[in-house]
Amino acid sequence: MRVVGLNGGKVVCSQETVTPGPAIKLQFDGGLRHVKAEEGYQILLTVRAADGEGHPYFRESGKVRFRTEGPAVILAVDNGDITGNEPYREDHIHMHRGCASVLIVLTGEPGRVSVWADSDGMRSGQITLCVG
Image (cartoon, rainbow, N blue to C red; front, side, top):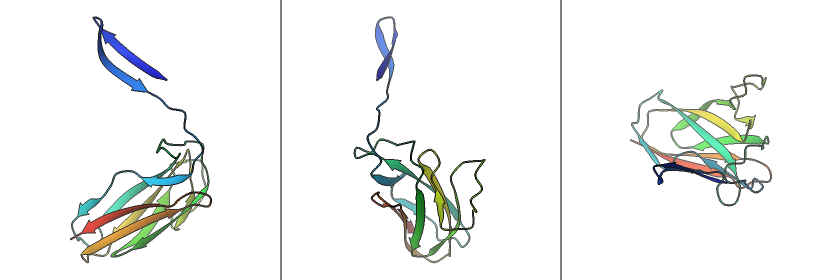
């Protein structure tokens, strides 16, 4: 569906909403990031379920398992569901409305940090951080 706002007959804004297909992959918000190598620095990363064209799929509730490689460790996970009772101090959590987040903490060493999100039946998501 596409909505167009007019002012004096001229287009001043527009918004398009697409109905997504089935969720087939996980994708992180944002892309490659550069951060200082500061011990204890925390970074919150969010992953979303998406269809084949990258449109968010909000009805997904599968379990996501996070893993890291490089100078960082997983501190906590969350999904934004205030009524949920899953523990935060894990490496996995069920998505809520198609989203899950992981909080990582840097060890202070320079290098590349890769973070993956895996869920059964979907392609894994991955993001890279350049630390240094």
